[in-house]
Length: 79
Image 1 (cartoon, one colour):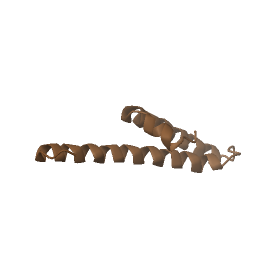
Image 2 (cartoon, helix red, strand yellow; image 1 turned 60 degrees about the vertical axis):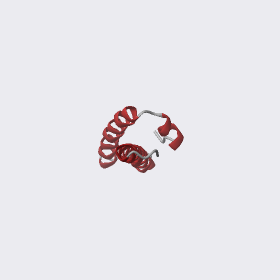
Image 3 (cartoon, helix red, strand yellow; image 1 turned 135 degrees about the vertical axis):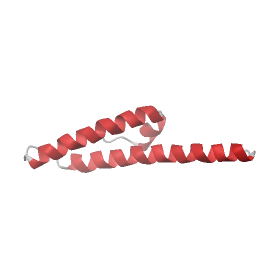
């Protein structure tokens, strides 16, 4: 799919989660096609893996940001 970072950041965490699941299933299909010598553009494998990594990175950043803000609120400090 080759998503840009700005496109991913515009999505909600829930949407990104669904997209990750879809891309992981797509990656399985691509790997299977590659093993059967049916995949002509092998660069799709790498691009799909990178897209998944980008999405997971954004999700992790958001998760850590939420934890940090909750900790700051518990301590009574404005972030």
